[in-house]
Image 1: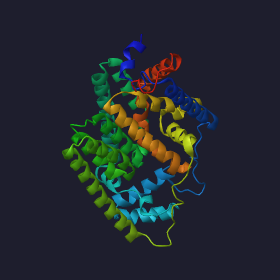
Image 2 (image 1 turned 135 degrees about the vertical axis):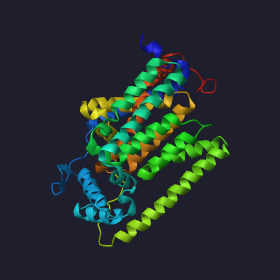
Image 3 (image 1 turned 180 degrees about the vertical axis):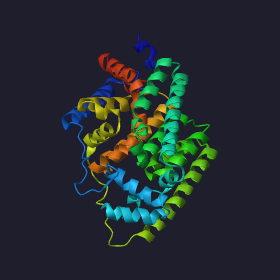
Image 4 (image 1 turned 45 degrees about the horizontal axis):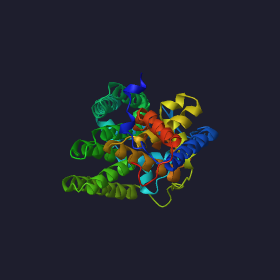
Length: 368
């Protein structure tokens, strides 16, 4: 049977959970499912009617296409991006309303087709890395194959050339690759990949911070020093970005309305639906699969499972609290790796229901 080739209960941290804890987790799961179903998975993605169109593109796609056209023509990035933000009625303040220049310089230097090919190679590396990692960790060919499939279908934006200019698409593929590479005693591959992702999108920072915290908890001072160096380089780069944006803007430029959307769980689910393969499925699919994927990551009893759950729970909190409805593209940072958690969901659910249905077990005697 297929279930026999998926992660067993012994690999799940919910095995032997006290009945009361199992009941609480199942109630939270039911509440999240119900909230997602009631909300309908809708997110405000409509483009303003006054938005400019460039080569048939609209919204962020058109903005970055116009910026790219200027940069390829020899105009400095910050002058180009400031002019196009004004022309497209996009905010320029605070400074992180403006994207880092790395991706635009790369596309201008090697061209859009070559950049797309590079993105596809990163995506292919993430797919293969997760396949190999789960086959090794779980001694299960099926688990590795399912993980590879779940990563592949949620990197669909890389296949469409227009999406390669959206920074979160490339950064999300790099995050998925870095998570597959994460090994506490061999952090250097993940460190290099995350450094590349940070140079494209500063919202990758929570992943690097969590990996750095793990190194501190392990008292692995070499790894901690490496992550500190990554952080210092990032701060230096962000400082230069701040200075350049400030030099290109004025007090009259539009300011962002802020990032305290407080949309809660419904917004988080809607973001994942809009930015994953589930955008082509009914709303109930996202309402069901997003919480199950998180539950799966929470249940996998391994260091990698804990690390990935930490990453995804952090982004879930950030999206629920800070994101506005039109920030849906932030979901692209986590969609490629989130749904791998579905591989572990059957074992997690089985363990929870077994704990709920068996005679009571005291908290002190249970193996959590």
